[in-house]
Image 1 (tube, helix red, strand yellow):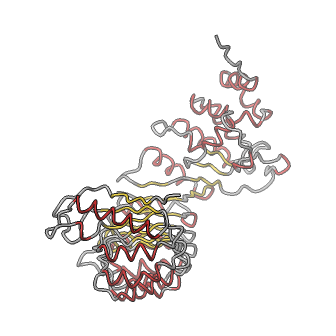
Image 2 (cartoon, rainbow, N blue to C red):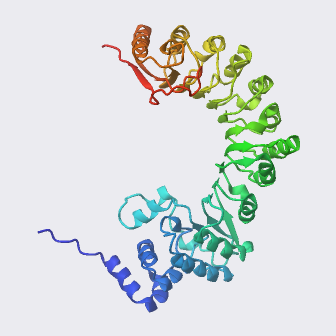
Image 3 (spheres, rainbow, N blue to C red):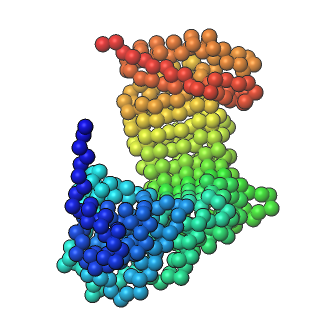
Length: 476
């Protein structure tokens, strides 16, 4: 029969304090720093409101990572923390013990709580949570605004109870609190409500914005001034921006594209279904201030002049990822795609040209420059019509790309009947032939062949959705 491990003296002291709320205020001044986090967790989960308030006012760390503890249906403990912060905000100086100036409501503090509960052996410095030394006390220094870190996901027509309560509390304390959000995600919410929420946020703190909802171009134009205030934006992802025939397209496009002049740290730009950019992509590209790492313009129509300007844009010369999937290029000059890849050959790691209607003459024109993309790791041509002959050339030109590990190609055109039906027996034969070709080229590699859908026949015929794996092992 195993003997249970007896509780530590510190644990016993903490349990005693939770039972005796009246002792908390006087005891916290002398409480060992290492006892604060486990005692705070017990008080928070046990809803010992008086203890919580006292501990916040004496918190010996710069940051209180509350996000990992919050139980959203119950705002009582959060309310206690905010009421304690009210007391701190009303003071001209913090107590000798309290070092708190960041309330972190992001779901990122679990490692801190695990460390202090004994479940982790990480040191203070690795988590950036070292207690501030007594000599650096800010007791007699002017108090900086309290920072509240939060991840905002606006996904309903109305805010949840937690966010509603927090924003109401902050609205009355704008001068002494800064609401900071690194990642902002927007789903279904009226733009008027979005703007009301964001008017309370330090927008220059936003580093990533995702809009995963259908917006009209007029909505995007209305939102554009807020985008321009996100001067430290690093990643922008917009999807499904539609426009109606009645919209003043040119003026609204300018309202949006001009905001890029203010985004001096933008690295990754993802635009899915940006129909409004057809014929005016140059307006946006001219406003880019810094070289991009990743660029995705997908599922839309672009003109040949759009792609020409893209190939000449100086801010794509360092691209690591380029995604033009769903952009039809069938009628474009083969030379344009060749020039575009020349611009990015030295740095490109990911290239997605799925469902682009690429012709064999276009593909053949880019094979020499494709073979120079020495950093390329992922390449996809699924959804284009390619014969076995051009696929053999493709495999030959890419065999020297030693970093290329993920290859996705369409099933050869010869795999289909004249009516667009996939012939599985023929497909198996061609797969074996491709494996023989790869073996003859002398390098182990694996490619995926996708047969759904056949771009010649759209979705008229159903095919297996899972791609086939062609794996070539080299004998020792």
